[in-house]
Length: 171
Image (tube, rainbow, N blue to C red; front, side, top):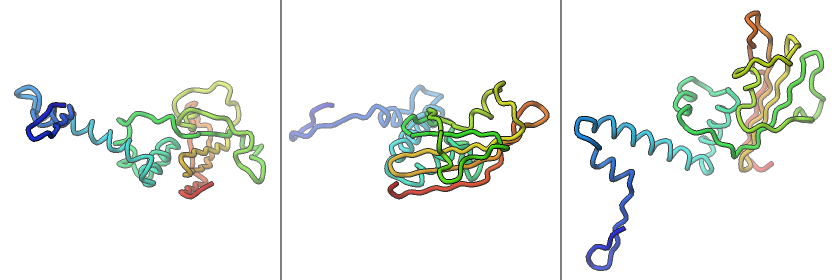
């Protein structure tokens, strides 16, 4: 911050200053692209608490239910948020969840509730099919998804969305 004439102060924002100068000669385009992406990610993260559409998009990312690949792809560079209250309940399909509250007996998880089937090989999962219920809450907004998960011949799993509810009102 530096003092200017007539008692005014000038505040220099480093990101904007780097954008203006463009970095080293010969790499101006790349530098501006990098700082532009950094600014866009920052705006996206700042919008999450106040823009319901952004919150819903991030919740769908966590549940792996984004509406389109182009809605999911740009979010991969955005750091994962740990501010959601994520819960999941996993039951073998032959023992479906209790009627009433589908999240009864649910477990808390930091992020990506479906990662049980997508990012790791779980040796403790012996049944051929499961019912996976996931719920994320954030500032009065809630996303609930129910998926049927079936074991595949290659040892992986196939997930199929059965139910999805998003509410933006008070709980």
